[in-house]
Length: 344
Length: 274
Image (cartoon, rainbow over all chains, first blue to last red; front, side):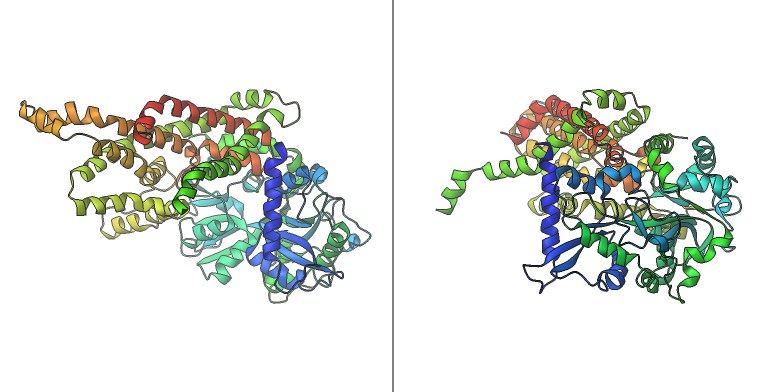
């Protein structure tokens, strides 16, 4: 009974995987299922990572859009794992999630080439991105210089949009704006962060999806937004919205590859991950998107270099402490929901 | 032959689909409340019920449900009365207008309201262009926006039961009341309304119950202090992976829904089962 819904989820996912199997593949093909967030991110992964991987004989890669940590967990617990390589965000895959993941095989994955801090027992980063400040250029004429300006309604009137997620960086930007040094962010002083957030709470708008964050700042509904650097880039460059962004005070994060525990094709999954983070392939997605490689030896697109988070480290940045966040996620969520829902 | 076949199998396929696609998953989610983590017992319920944040979200949910029920009840009843009094052509038009929202995706309707109500939206653009106001009126992310969005979406659920009860009303009774000297107003309130209020009651129960589970509309149109329990449940499942707490919250909401249905059962039965 309890495994009923999980079974149903797993069956649904495998049916989806089958339906997505490219035409022309034979029944003998074994499908290695790659899961990412979809959209432009997936297109870059498909072109530069999945299509350039020399799959073992009899294997092909089937992409699935829609990362979902709860679904992954359900699959593992129901023992019906149909995902093999999972490209999750920075909150997923720390040692705290070890019971749902296979340990990575660093005999094939080039750990020593990965930038320090981005390779763990259960996950390895494949792209480095950041949370940054973007603004509407019709409303904000003088570029802001950091998160302090995000909280300065006198100097920069207008609403602010923030990610509606306790572990997404909202407490971090409040503390950075309040003068906390980036390397002294953790453990987060939640009381201080909330006090700072309360100073602009009536002007806050909460976004639930990256696309919404672009829409809010692009339409002028808000003057400034905290969002993913790839979203800010998309709004400005691809959507040609009146949007620009700054890298000062950005919070670095990474998307990580992991293998759900009980995957049918663990060795092949490790091989695909090794390719994804290799010096040859890892920098290629920067041809299309402002995603920096995690492999120190990887080359990036010269045209994209000015828009990569890693090109602006001298302007000041912080890094998410994923281990601390994972260990304190319940507390963060509780404080966040209590603060957010309180009327002022 | 075909119709005999369908008569023979009756509603069983539908019931089977409901059982597999709705009752089973719902039962599993609720079962999580006592089995997750193993040996949880009632600890999830104690934790949730002692949590002031849950209480606040629950109050938001009930508050919105009450406000929306009152408005949809009043508007829906008189809309149904207009349909009842109208000629066939106008009635068909009114019915189409009432049903139209039901055929549009909930997400699209909610987003459409945000385009209308936001600071750079249609209403504020009109008001500013016409010189009525200098600065946009903040309507988005308020209780007002949630209420108006939900009213528009839920109106059919009060219009249709009210209209059903009016169709069953014997119009001779009004003529009798008038012939005995009642004013039109008195005939309405003392004869027509008491006979048709069961339709209003059935609609109110439906709207209240549906409001308790609303998610997309409050998320898109509401402010931080207008968010319903569904938001908290989602956060527990997707970001906290705490299926025990989510199960306990779901069980509490389900109990509230069943309680409301029990309270309104008589009215619902009269409208939908006769």
